[in-house]
Image (cartoon, rainbow, N blue to C red; front, side, top):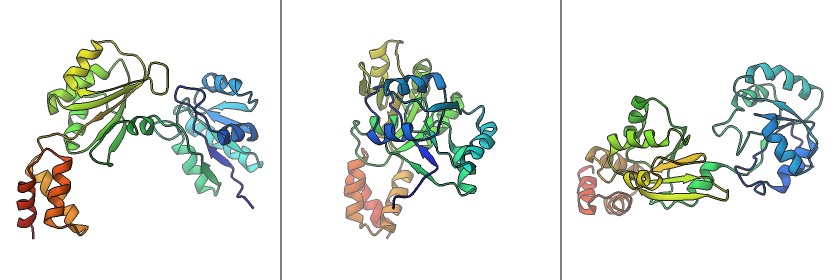
Length: 270
């Protein structure tokens, strides 16, 4: 017999209303209530698919207030679906407080697979490594931005940013990392979707101070990696059983760094 769940985490489209699963529609129709960020936004989706389930607001400003309400509904045997305005709840959207408390109370929770801006973006951006670091919305403070990009100089660093701040943010990044290669996506899944892969300077020139839509951006690893960073990578690979030659091949393919130099560094650590 299929397990009965009391709380369903349901992804919703990030732009194109057709990007919703049959199961998501089924769940939204079958639950007793839907917890959503903005009832007006969610209602448009529900109307489109003729879903009559009652909606209640649940956002970062009333998360704790709603706990008792949703708990009481579940204690009555009712089922709840949690959605955000777009994408998957808890991925830069509310939900963590509610789920943490409900799990403590023994409530059965499940999550449906579905739309998410970061995976939609990253799946169409070429990378030398499968690894990437996602930090959600990048901080607004210039000092915090500088700190976070400096600490992740050797990684594919992915973040969200608002269109009205992206140019300033890129200028700050450029002041720290130089005119590095980036990938910038906007209007994902929508009519004017665009992915731009170029240097920061060329991306800024392309948009010329005007851009629309929510932004997903990835900074490529710096081509000028310090020896200390490479040594740390070598140590991690060697701990997993890779030999000096393997380390040289792997790391030289990921970074603009001499294969021979990596090999020599790897040998020096033996």
